[in-house]
Amino acid sequence: MDFGAFILFQRLDESVGTKDVYKHSLDLVCRAEELGFSTAWFPEHHLIHYVSCPSPLMMTVAAAARTSKIRLGTAIAVAPYYHPIRLAGEIAQADTLTGGRLEIGIGRGAVNYEFARFGVDSKLASARFFESASVVKRFLSEEEVEHQGEFWNFPASTTVPRPAQTPFPRMWVAARSIDTIRWSISNGFNVMTNVGWGEPFTVIEQVAQQVNAAIREINPPVRPKFGVSRVCFVAETDALAREAMRAAQVSSRIFSRLFRDQVEVRNGFPVPEPLEGEASAEHLSETLIVGSPATCIEKLKRYKEIGVDHFMMFVFGPDQASMKRSMELFGTEVMPYFSDTK
Image (cartoon, rainbow, N blue to C red; front, side, top):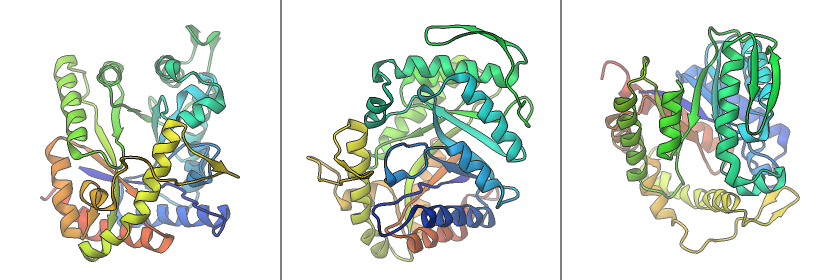
């Protein structure tokens, strides 16, 4: 099991400017490279400061200019927001500008607040995703692509530039449903998954079981990788780590409300109003990868046991200093346990 760092570009209020958020986030990428993370992953969210990263591909290029070997990925590019011609071209361009270090995570999206404002019918998001992802993969691997589909139609066309990697950057699909898992594996994609902050490990375990069952049934020529993203916070002691979960509870509220389009947004800042039945700080401490290095190692053993190939550390903290310290403890005291010698 290797490790990636998922960088959120979090801006909770006006006390921190966007320029400072970007500097801090890119500094985290540089530190992740030094610590031995294989990949830095960037999100795509729109219209909110809380995740100030509307273009993960643009961020991979910015990060490439400051690093030399860490791979750089989108987690995820939301396919229904793009015409596939544009998405394929921007992926190929980013692959060239990152020196062939690009990883592509792609998915349908899940934030109803964004769907409503993009004019995307959430009921059609999966269908748009399946069509777009198929076309993008063809554009990256074939010189001439003609397409007649439900959402897009165009004559024979070639993506320019061509991707730097042969045949194209490694591609991952964000999947939780069995239909999306089966489609992804049947079409040669790797699978990544993410669950709600308060959802238990058993939900991830169920997804892993579905992935492994689909691999056995489909028997693809190359076994796909399975990646999981999970919020992590490592501190010197369990007690210190638990103190950060009040901040995690606020973030969990924001994400839950955005997914449901039940959020009040003021000048781009979501209002973290409590939700009925929301996860407590104590529950989050138990459910997420939170604790001392020893505690986090014990929690992560379960992920390795169910077949996770790539664990994405969702880098979290109440403030910038604690995020960096958490990632450093993860890199120096947690990751080495899972090296190939173990």
